[in-house]
Image (cartoon, rainbow, N blue to C red; front, side):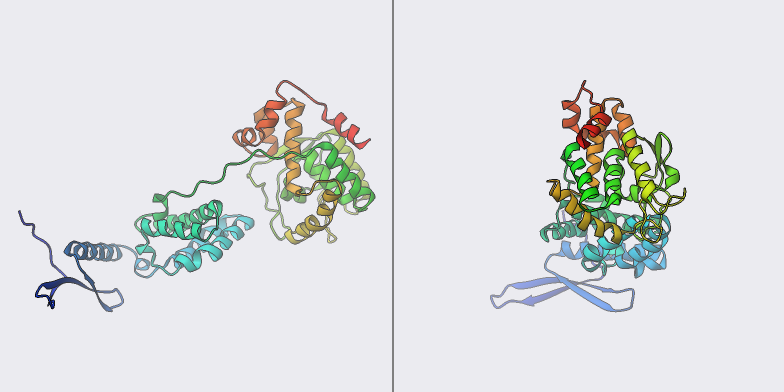
Length: 379
């Protein structure tokens, strides 16, 4: 039984071949929204009809939607998302991360395409291109997440009919490995070297805050003296790249940290030396009585901290890795359950159990006295 085909906008072209047979092609004609007349030729009728129907669908979408549908590129959608959501809502550090991902990985690859024309197959091809450029699963995943945010915002504005990123599977993020744990003796050698060789009591107190307090670098940079109480330290701030305070922690949840006596003694000794000791002064100040910005922090980490760690035999050290030792000490101390330790560290129970599985198994039912262990190492 023959089927009736809608030949609207499709021309049949017949040309004789030298062998006496006939070449039949199908040309689809259409007019762009800007008035330009265009045509495309297909060897198969079904392909021509499918293409014509897709053009009709697209034209209907444009006619039924806001004016931006006809002209908005993915770059236009990014600029609007950035202006209306990223700048007013997100933290400076997150904003800088998103801007970098767009600039490095997305702007040239997809920015010029009309947003209404981007389909899931295009996102799949983009995923393959990112992986082929050896960006890695984590970077590719991050780029697709940012692109998904852009299209989600465009969908809310009715610029596109769907979010094509949501329908494409992202590369799996690498599993979090169990954190390598340095020991108290090594860190105390660092602290001793900072005091006696580097002549930097500031570096020594940073080491104490990181491994005895479990602070993230952005958190100890944000500490003020009025956050330090008699038995606890309040964690309620983090720093932006310029050294200003964000007004919240990374997880947007304030927390209180029990102040081990040995850390309390270190803070008291440092306060006696610090030129800035008013309640609103930074515990770790720069020369302008302000909080360290990113450049000041990175310069210290590359130079003083790296030399100090190398002298103690810890060659892959970073300031943030001192947090892992703090989590390990809390587990070994055995005083807090997993939920309490996770709250103190500022992350989830699942992350705690995944990162420190070995420590949890090794010290199950055993306890150490952290203050005595630190005192022994210092002697």
